Length: 410
Image 1 (cartoon, one colour):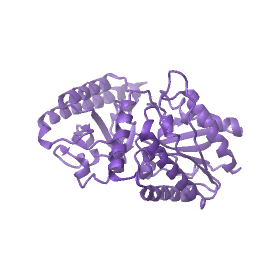
Image 2: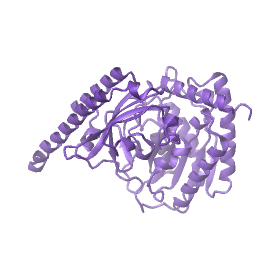
Image 3: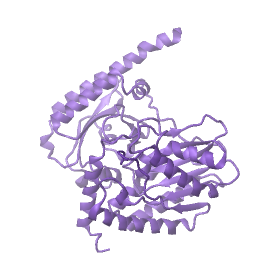
Image 4: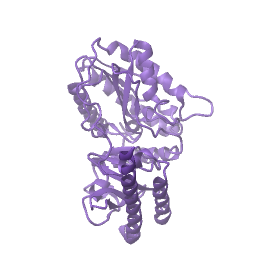
């Protein structure tokens, strides 16, 4: 326990943020996080996690753990399996329930958790981590269908992740061992549940971040441990596995679907201009709807969407003036946010974006890894860039309306 001092923990969190930022240039999937067979009688898996589930090194979820797990289960059971993936590298155990949101669990025959990589490396205090994992297991256990299994994979060996070796990796591994032991203890009271060591990844020469071979090997291991948990009965199709994640704003659906389109390119240009102008690593256009925040340009190390309640932008949308957060760790509105802590973005500045009708539909925001004084943020310039982003979004609305009569005529 002597190692887990506040100073060491702070150092480990900074090391995680730096190492994670260094590998953000590696390919990751940007397509829908699902594997679908098209078989109406397919059984269903919910894959929840970070780290290995994120798909480092491949460009599609079909080549990541999502797709390979579905194929491995089909090969080992003879049934068709569809897989829904929920999570991101920046999700941790404390925010897992936020990522799940209102998702129904009853349609799933199997729930697979591959969690705790970043909790291990960042030295999340064991009591807090245990409470979060216990709450997550209670939620999954109470919501799953009768006979559905739960499989939890332990933290992969820390040193097997590129950049995570040395003394810091050894400290992280010691903590990972503690987290794994706690998980095994929590599962003793849960029926039809099991724990398995994930093991080191199988990598290919020249692809240390991961490859299809990496994920197929892990998937076969997970499927082998999952099969004994499966009941003979199908969970059925009652409930909706995933609420539609398409915002109601007219321009959202085409904008999210055409990330290489002209309007998306215009938004990316603004994001790059803002990064240069303000000297920040991240400048993003976001769309807000329901309980989700979307990133339509697919820029930077961000997922397709995140739970809205975990973000700065939810507060930005509720006020008429731009929001500037010099240091989120000292701001009572955000100091307790586990997501912002893991994302390591203490600085934030954002302005709301509105539709032609005046409804808030998103934000134009800046984020940084280090605090900065509020007077260093040129709010007038931020509002100018936000206004340009807003006008681009209006043109997306115009594009949608112009296409509508043609669609009717056809």
